[in-house]
Length: 341
Image (cartoon, rainbow, N blue to C red; front, side, top):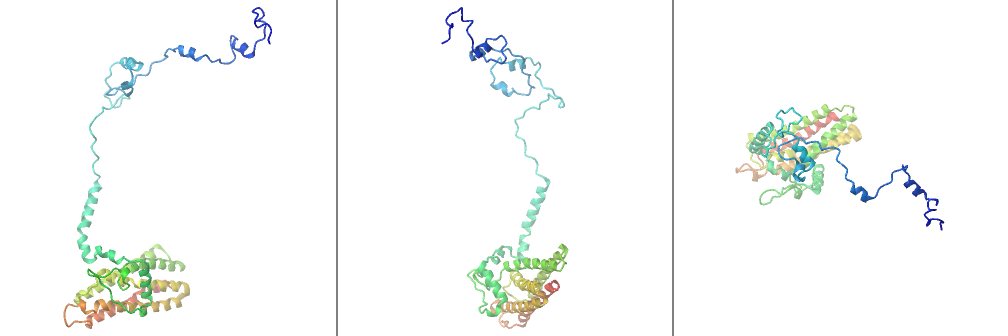
């Protein structure tokens, strides 16, 4: 126990702790916080008034929620004339508020051109449908994997196929995926694109590839295809031969030759000129037999002839069938011979 703490005479002589000595010093070396009650009782005087806001039509946002007789309202009252400046270049200029709904921007000028183009396209749809029935194109693409495999086998080995009759339903022929003898446009379209790719590969192996040469190859192949179809249509019209062959049917039969052309080009890339000529000869013979057996049921059928006495042995039909089948090997050789060296 400490001695002399209770004696007031000796209390000053008693040693003090370090905290007591620092707090009782006239100038303490660090800030000593005051009690919260003392801080709350002191109200500091304001050192500045808020800057008066720029006047705009209508009360300011903070004035709607602030109580009256505040410093902000006092500042507004002492601001002077509240009328805003009318000069737009003035920094205090505020545009007048409006409650009208802004009108939508005017249509750009190209909207009318687009609408006119759509109307012209819709107006020309009946003329396009006269030559190419666009609505029936989905029938020619109704295929599956089984049909594609069987059709490719039929194109390479038509000698093993016996039944070439196309099956019909009540409203027309069945879809290609249900009948291997039905023409389709999926295989010709894919074969045409693949032929262009293989042709580019063949030109690249010979250091002759260029975008212009590939474009020339595509345009020439497409031009010969369309020319062949137009020639057949013209022959049917000139000889007045009624048939159930449509323009998509002719496109399909004319496009099947690209399958043999692809096989011949691949053989030429792998085995040289000898392999190319061997595979091309087989594919030419196969496409000739395929075309004769497929078209004879459409061009030489008695059901397609509406006049008695002009049956399946009419000379124009026989010649046209033979001509269509004979030009297929010529096109195959002409479109692939320059790609293999």
